Image (cartoon, rainbow, N blue to C red):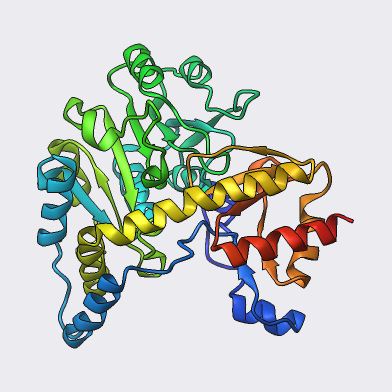
Length: 364
């Protein structure tokens, strides 16, 4: 390649998405495969959202509302924050890109768990800054004390995923309060709450989007891709102080949330019955999967997300490829530092039963 590529860009390992189901089925000669690899909503999208998206297609010749007036207003009302604290993104990844682009300079550092969402590392490196990794605790929970130990004069931000991906572990309110009390006030905490809707109501869990935004020290990231079933639309948002939101608007692409995405998200927020149905399904099916995996003698990690981690005691990629031939798509977790683990999101009961039978077969 003749074009000069800066060294900090050339060394980035790109995010590798999975192949489309249709292509996998064609390559392997299988049909009716089940995908449990991407933490998607097995029920699809809200019928109300689909209706709103369909109706929005008649105005595709217009540019979207660049400020997302109606959607930010509805999100603000839901969370009890000023709409001006809400910044829309083409998925929450887009907001991560804005935050790192606006706040990091070459040579800065950002602290994150060794095993968390891969886009944190990619976005930080893209700015010429350095990710600083902290291993998880032995029980796969986030090591908040370990993160504090990595803080120095170069640190600008800390990424926390709550619940964490890929482990499903969560942080309780007392632990978060203690962490923030010890953290220097000039360091921003970016708390990714992509799976917050799935957290059991009996947990001592607090969402950053409702309780910490006014301090100006914390950003909460949310998405419509998981519980709301709108992954294909790419719509998410960040909740932050008004001052920081104004900074992001300086670099935000003016039409980064499309007309169908805004229409679908607005309708999805109103369809609380669908959200409740989705969350209840996930919690029920996770318990079913825990039971079946336990009966197989495999170790697993209980989760507060819509997925969980299973330890196989052998090469996960080998099992991944064997499962593909059985028509079941899962995620091998070597890229996250778990070479003998797979991650599986809960599907419908027939999908989960097919997964269990396939896993029994390939493990033999």
